[in-house]
Amino acid sequence: MLKGYDVSKYERPSVAVDIILFTIEDDQLKLLLVRRNEEPFKDKWALPGGFVKMDESLDQAAIRELKEESGVKDIYLEQLYTFGEPQRDPRTRVISVTYMALAAKTAWRLRASGDVVETGFFSITDLPALAFDHESIFKYGLERLKSKLGYSSIAFGLLPSTFTLSQLQKIYEVILSKNIDKRNFRKKMLSTDLLVSVGEKLAGGAHRPAELFRFKKREVVYTD
Image (cartoon, rainbow, N blue to C red; front, side, top):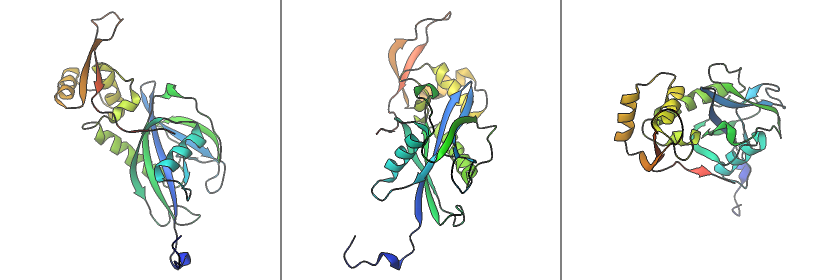
């Protein structure tokens, strides 16, 4: 601390992180939630997250909280938005920096620990009532996810390192909740600067082998 600085001179809001983790299962877009074991909102479902420690960055806090409360790590993660309405947390003034994550559900096993008693995935069309302002945070994240599909490689978190255009199209259809014309989708994706052919084809199946692609640039992945 700077010598002579009076830390009590100004109010000090608490800073938290909340994580919106999406996955796809059974052709449904799902959201990871945790059931709280503490007040406020004890026994209510919420987004994973918690308070930032004095000696860690925001990114480090998000990685730590996600791993502690669900066991999830090594996934796509990006800082999304900051929510800071004065009354959003009944405990005190809390500013929350939110993150968005995408992951294939088979990549890890969920486990609850810390201040949560249960973790689970819920279809975004059938969510329980959420604690705090987490419904608003989720809705913001969903719209952001949809908007980024057209110009970024955000979908890579839900795909293997190489994939067919049909596999990619299915991801888009699930997230956007609508069917997409195959020919138009292929034309649009190949006209972007997002994909590159790996020069191989997907083996097996009754139909002609499909060409495999990868993203030219994959979004950042944080690991611990």
